[in-house]
Length: 305
Image (cartoon, rainbow, N blue to C red; front, side):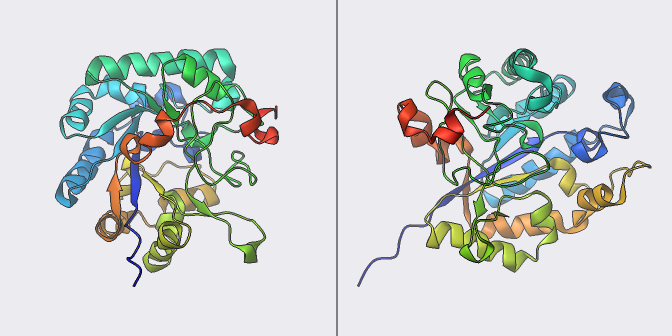
């Protein structure tokens, strides 16, 4: 009798930003107003830390430098409880919109702040709004390597609000020979959908989809395809009492607010039903692998502009 395949460990991550910094509110909340708005990120991130401790799991916290500057005690707690401290950039700007030079400066600013407060090396990165792509930002992974990062988890292998691309690999890959590896967000491409990606990585899809359906999809990733998943959550997703600014278009208001009251409970089920750990441990082999030769990278990814 064949022994069952070992249970795969998935990567658990948190994108640490406050409720007013989300893309859906960008048109109605100018960043110049941020310091005057009610800050809730320390309390909501604390709820996630409490939940993770109760479930006995550790995660990667992709944290804005802007948030870290204003919440040093929170950063120290993340590190003290054994989680990986990683970068979400400094100012929560779309990478494609700011260009290579400002991107490099943003990376350096965030890394300096996070390492100074956290007292640990910061080598992981996730772009705001998954705004890295082989066509829009072909320089991004090289700059990440040049600024001391070891990996990125910033790409959605499908269509995602102006980012991502449907032909990207579903598993870790190197977009360039000299850049850091990319650990893409988890998706399925069932044949019945002719290659269209179904997100299985958190966010609004996790909040909208019935929990049994989401769990079934992630189980397919783990068992049928033998892939490790990457899941993400924002602190504001476990904060149903957050302010609701006026003037937000109906669709964006729905996408931001759907399911907030039940996210924490659903997340607790997910942590119980699957195995989880930090990004840097789940994908340690991919981060340590030698750099690919250019020929090993699909040409449409390595050369697209």
